[in-house]
View: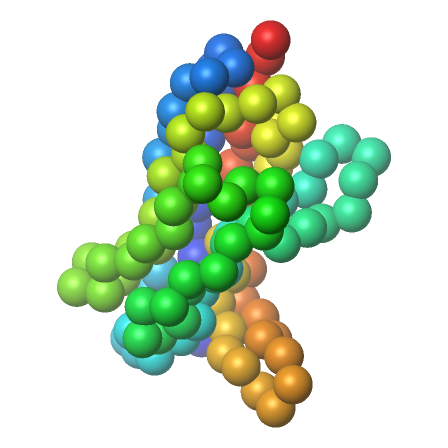
Length: 120
């Protein structure tokens, strides 16, 4: 079993930066692909970024060039550096752990989420 806990959310002005963290309790953190997702009020949950166990990254077009996903396997921690934040980035952000299985990534474990609010 893997338990994930997000932190680092907050209320900031447009153009500001935030760094989200996701602490994992699993013993095999370095073997998982990790992802960040977000859900805005009245919207479905959407993909933000992922990083493979080997360090390869992929981003949604809406955040590419502004957000950076990274991981520190020694600390069992996933990060999301968010720069140039916009009001449309306002959402609850979730981290997840999973793996690529056949045709797609499947996420088995999810955190409780952390609120990010960007005001104009």
